[in-house]
Image (cartoon, rainbow, N blue to C red; front, side, top):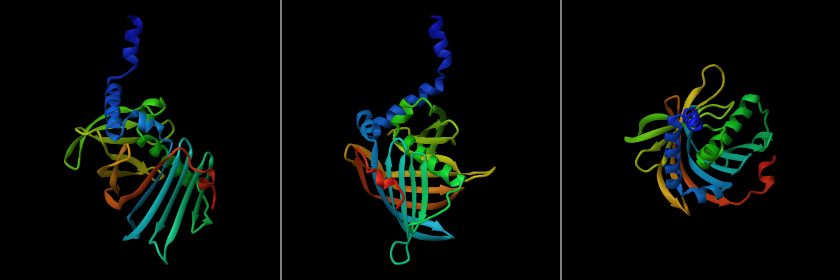
Length: 239
C-alpha cells in the first residue's frame, strides 16, 4: 500500500491525461503498430513562403531517418532564378549549403537543426509514449479552427518546449507551437494542419500553414510522401 501511494504521488494526474490524448492521436493517425514501424520517410511539399515581404513559390523535400538523420532541401522560386537551400544533420555532423556552396554554420543555426529533428520525432507521436525524456504533460484546452482541442506540452531536456494541439473529437494533431529564434526574446511559431487524408496506413495532413509572431509566413500542400525502412547514408552527407 505504501508503494502504491508513492507511485500515485510520483505520477501527476496531468501525465495520465496527456497519455490518454496521445494514445487517441496514435490511433487516429494510423495505429501504434504502423507508426512504430516507420523509421524513415521522405516528404515533398510545395507552396509559398514570405521573403522580404513577398510571397515566393517553393518546393521542399525533407528526408528523415531516426534517430539522428535529417536532410531538408528547399528550392525557392523554382526555375532559372531559383535558390536552393540545403540543410543536413548526420549524427553530430551538420552542414548548410546555398546552391551547393557551403555556408558557415553558427551555433544558433546548428541548434535550429537539432530542434527541427526533435520536432520530427515528437510529431511521430510514438516517441511520446516510449521516450521518458520527452515528458509529455497535459497543458489545458483550446480552440483550433473553431473546434475544441486539447493541448499536450513536451519538454525535451535542454531543448525548447513544444505544444501539441489535438482535435478533441477526432484525436488528430491539428497544430504545433514552439519558440524559434535566438536571444532573450524568441518568437512563437505555430503550424496548422488540415485536409487530412488516408495515405497508405497513415492519416496525414495535406495542407500546412505556418504563422510566426502572428504573421503568416508559409502555406504549403503535400505533394508526395514515401515511407521507407531506411535511406542511403550519402543522402545526409555534403553534396
